Structures are given as C-alpha cells and as structure tokens.
Amino acid sequence: MTLIIDGYNVIRLFEKKPVGQLVQESERNSFIARLQGYMLKRKTTIKKMIVVFDGGQLPYPEKFLSNNVSIIYSGHRQSADDWISHHVASLYGSGMCVVATDDRALSKKIASFVDLIIKGRDFFELVSKAFRVSADSLTADKKRGQFLEYETSFDDEYQNVDKAYLRELMELTTRDIISQKIDDEISADRSHGKSETDSKNTLKIKRILKKL
Image (cartoon, rainbow, N blue to C red):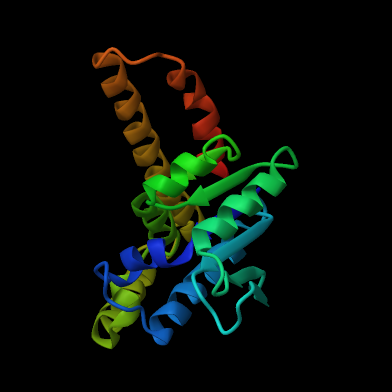
C-alpha cells in the first residue's frame, strides 16, 4: 500500500492550527516525526508513505527521504494538490493507494484513481491511538511527565498483561469506530434515497482500514 498525506491540510489537526495561521518549522518536524513512528509500526502493510507540502526552495518539486518516509515539497509552480493528483494518476493500477486529506476539491479530483480517501480527523485518530497517547501530550513536558507516571503505574499494576496485545486492541478499536462511521454515512445516503452502489464498497474500505 502507498499512503499519501496532504501535508499542510492534515498537519493542522495534529498541531491544532487554524486555517490561515502559518505552520512553523518545528511543528512540521514534529508532524513528520509522528509519521515516521507510525510508518515503523505499520511497515508490514504500508509499503510507502509520502507526505506532500506546498512550496519549497525551488520552482520544481523536491524529494527527501527520512526514516522510510518520503517528504515532497511541490515547488513554486504547482500546489501540493497538483502534485498529489498527478502522482496518484501515475500510480493507478500499480497497487493499493490511500490518500489522507480533508480537501474536498482534491478528493473529488482523485476519487477515481485511489482505493480510499481517509479524512484527516480519522487519520489523526489512527496515528494517535497507535501510540496510546494524544498528540497534545507530545507537545507538553508536563503532560509527558504525567503520561510517564501513568506508564510506570500501569507496569506495576498490570505487569502480567500483554502490552503489545493491548496496544493492538486499541488500534483495532479505533478502526472499528471509523468503520462504524462509514456504515453510518452509507445508511444516511440510503435514507436520503441515494444509490446503494457506494455501499458495495463498504467491505473493501474496512479491509483497507485494517492495513492502515
């Protein structure tokens, strides 16, 4: 699976940045670090992760590789949306492709070329739950200390519990929640008299979610 992230569109959820407020370099680096950690955890199913940002130092796209995550700056002559659109079209038919974005225009443009478009909020939940800690706690030393104290307490009280199993269980729970949201959206479409064609993709979507 290739997972492509619409960088500045999704990063605002992780860093709680309102639209119109510039993302700082430190915030971008923190976001990339989270993606790198997630890639390490999911490398058995996610074969390639690409995060795409607008702009960069040059007119044309630049590519960097950091801990198995490809970082793309689209350049001055095109937007990140343009780069993503062209890239997913070039990948069409060569393997599973998923894009994380909340951009409606981009989603509409690439819908026929990708296997799944996952909303930014849902992707945020997957990444956050994978580490059993919210993105907020990663940015505050005080909260980090509270989390470490909790981990120590957890180890003392539940030392015989399989922690790897618990982590996997929490990830699966998150995927179940997202799957239920998809089911609810399909049910809403049916209630509004929309075609049931979309509902036929439900099982496919759930299978993809398990790989994310």
